[in-house]
Length: 514
Length: 119
Image (cartoon, rainbow over all chains, first blue to last red; front, side, top):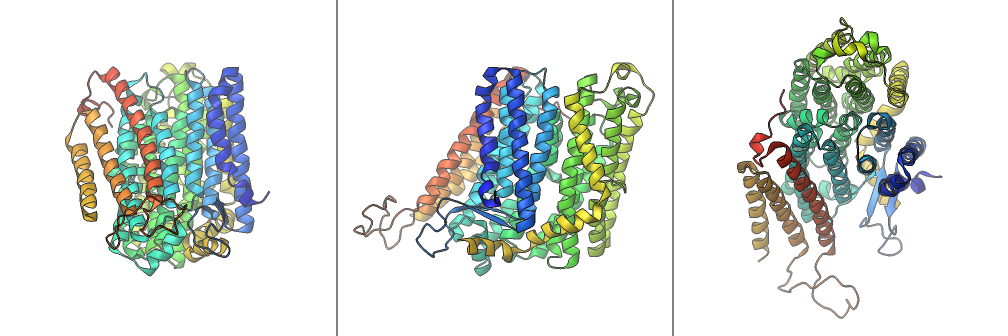
C-alpha cells in the first residue's frame, strides 16, 4: 500500500478503537485488554509503514476531499491537507511505539483501578491527537488535534479522581493548558484575518510576499502558547504537578510524547515551515535560546533537590526539554549553516531518544510504586537486591539520559553540545552545567537503589510480565540505538533536519500536488 | 461599524484575562476562560463579515448566486467557530467535573486552597 493511501488509517484506527472500546468492554476484561492491544498494535504497524514509506519516497501529501475543488488544473490550496515529511514521520513512529508500550504496561499496572473502559478510550484518543498533530498541514486542523490531545490528557491526569493530588494537578494543568490553547487560537484567527488561508505551505508563501506586523504578533502568540504547552521554564510549574500525579503509564506518555508533539514539534513546524522566510530567524532563534538556557538550568537544578521519585523525573523532563529547545533555537539562529543543521539534527534525535528514556524511567517509577506503594526516595533504599531487573533497567535509562557514551543519549547530546559550542561557547558551557545537575539527580536515585536494604524494600519483587516486557523492550531499544549512533544520525536525523529546514520543498510538495 | 465588533472582541478578551488573573473562585475562573474563548470567536466570525461598497453581505448559499448581486459572508470562519465552540464545550464540561471533584476533596472552591502540591 502506498503512503498516501495508508495515511488516513493512522487516525481511523485509533478513533474507531477508542469509541468502540465501551462496547467491546461489555464482553469482559479480557476482550477489553485484547482490543486495546490490537488497536495500538495496528496503529504501530501503520505508523512504522508510514515512516518507512516517507523515508524511501519522500514527503507524502494527503488531501481530504477533492484534489482541485475549483475545477481542472486549478491548484489553489483551499482544502485541508495532511503533509508528512521525514520529521513528521519520525514523530509518528515515536508516538505509536511509546503509546503501544504504555498500553501493554497498563494491562498490569492499572489492573486494580475501576473505569478502565474510559481509561483505554482516553489513552487511544490521546494517541490519535498526537498523531494528528504530527501529520497535519493545516493550521486549524492542527488546533483541533491539539485540543483533542490536551483534553484527553487533562482527563487522564485526573483519572484517579478519588485522590486530591490527581484533582489538584488536573485543575492546574487544565487552566494552564486552556489559556495556552486560547493564545494559539487567537494567533490562528489573526493569521486567517490577515492572509485568508490556513494551509501551512500557502500561508508561508503569503507571509513571505507580505510580512506584516499582524503576522509577527501571531508568531509571538504561537511561541508563548507552545512554550506553555511544552513546559519551558518560567511556566513549568504545571508540569511538575501534572506528570507525577497521573498514573505512571500516562506519565510516560505525557513526559515522553505530549510535551514534545504539542510543544516542540509544533513550535519547530510553525517556526520553520511557516515563518522560515518571512521573519528575522536570528531574533526568534535567540529568543528561544534564552528560554532554553533558563529551562535547562532550572529544570535540572530543581531535579536535584526533589525527594519524590516521579517529581524528580518530571523536573528532569523540563531540563531535557531545555536541551531540545536549545537545539531548535540554534537551528533557527544559525539558519542555513552547517552548525544550524547539526543543532537541529541533535534536537530531533534528542526528542526521539528522550521519548524512549523518559518513557522507560516513568514505567520503572510505576513498577516501584506498584510494589512499594510509595515514591519517597528515602524509603526506596536497597531495591537493587529485591528488584534486580527493574534496577538494571533504571541503570540503563539513567545512564542514557545523562549521556553516557555507549547509549543513545550520548549521540544526541553530543550533537547539541558540539553545535552550541560552535555557535557560541557560552551556550555550550551552560549545556554542560545542566548535564552536571542532571547527573547529580540521577546518581542520587541510583545511590538510593543500591543502598542498604530496609523497610518496605525487603518485601518488594520484580513486577509481573506485562509490566516487565515494555521496560525490557525500551531498554533494548536504548542499547541498540546506542550501538549505531552516527549511522542513525547520518541516515535519519540529518535528513529529517534538512526536511524541516527546507521550506521551499515543503511548499513545492503542496503546490505541485494540487 | 466593523471596528465596533473588533473592539468588542478585544474588550471581551481583556476582560477574560483580567478575571482569570484577579479572581479566586474556581467557577469564576472557568467563566473567565469561556469569556476569553467568546472574544476569540467573535473576532473570528467578524473576520468573515466584511462590508464592501456599503452592501450588507448575505448568507453563503451558492444556489442562484448568479442572480444575486450583493457580496456573501465568508463561510470558513463560521465552520471554524462552530468547531471551536464544540471544543470549548468539552473543556467546559471537563472543567466543571473537575471542580465538583475538587469541592469534594477540599470543601471549598477557593483556588488558593489548591496548594498542597509543593516541591
